[in-house]
Image (cartoon, rainbow over all chains, first blue to last red; front, side):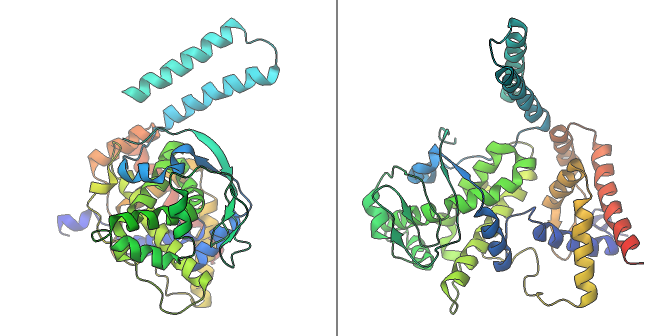
Length: 118
Length: 263
C-alpha cells in the first residue's frame, strides 16, 4: 500500500466515519447544516436563555477586531472550575470565608492565570 | 485581538411569532425571525431601522456589494448580526466541551464576521416561504461555524480564522443533505449509530469530535499528524498513545453496539 494511503481510514472505517459524522450532526454535536437541523435547533433554543456578551452590542467593533479563537486546555478549565467551586461553596455555607479557604482560592486563581499566560 | 468581553444582557431566542418584523417598544423589539432581545444599546439605531424590513437575502446582497458601498454593506450586516446573534451564540455553545466557554463565544463572533466577508458566496433560495429561507440562511451559518471550529481544532495555538486558508463557504455540507429518504435498513443503522454515540464517555466524545477535524468527505478521517496529536494530548492532558486509544475505543464501541443491535 502506498505510504499516503497509510494515513487514511480503511474502507470499512471510512463508511462508519461518514455515518458517524452524520450522526454527530443528528445528535447536535455540530452546528446545524441542514434546514431540518436548523428547525430542531430553533425549537430547542426557544426554551433556553442565551447570554449576550457586551461586545456583541457593538457589532461594528467586532467587524474591525475579529481575532483568534481561544481553546482552553482541559486542565485549565478544570482548575478554573475548581476555583469557582471553592468560591461557590464558601458562599453557600454563608458567613465569612476562612483565611485557609481564601488562601486556597487565591492560589487556585493565581495558578490558573499563570498557566493561561504561558 | 478580541475586544473586551463582559456579560450583561440575557435574551431568549424564540421561533414563535416569526411572521414578520414588528416593534415592541422603543427599547425592545422582535426581529423578522422572532428572536427577542432584551433592551440593548445600538451604536447606530437609525441604521438598524433603515434595514429592518429587508429580508436576510437582501441584507446579504447589500453586504456582497461592500466594495461599491461599504457603508450600506456594514449597516446591512449590523441588522443581520442583531437578527441572528442569539441563534449563532446558542448553536456555538455546543462546542463548549472542546473549545471552552470563551472559545465558543469567539466562534460565534467569527462566524458572524465571516458572513460579512463571504456574503457573496451565499446562494439564495429562488422559491420557498420565509421559514425555508430563514432555515437556509441559518444552515449556511452552521456550515461556516463548523468549518471555523474544525479548523481551530486542528491547531494547537489559537488561530486567526480569517487567514486560515478557507475560502468559499458556499461549498456543500459535510453531510449529504439530499439523502432525506433513506431505506429502512439505512434509517435503522443511523438510529443505532446515534444511540451508540450517546453511550460514549465525555472524553471519548470530545476526542472523537476533535479527530473529525481531519475528516475529508469521500476519504474519511486522516491519521492525525504527530505534531497535531501532541497538541491534542496537551489539551486533553494525556499521552498521544492514549488519544489514539480513546478514539479507537470510541469507534469500537460504536461498531460493537451496531453488531449487537443488528443481530
